[in-house]
Length: 88
Image (tube, rainbow, N blue to C red; front, side, top):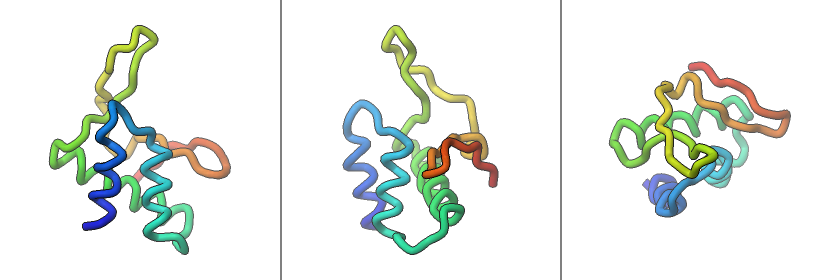
């Protein structure tokens, strides 16, 4: 799957922003609605989490990584109109 290899290439760094993942998905599915794009992005994130290829989280002010204890139902993905909480 070409999209999977593109996302993993970005994830080789220490961290990758959710917006970056959303942009990669947009390259592969440019004519989809915002809602379809969000769903596709969350599906890819869920696939990577299930396969233990990535860990979702953020860095603290001290530079430590803090793993999220959230499902993809509660992940934020920015869009053109701001940041929203996505639900399946």
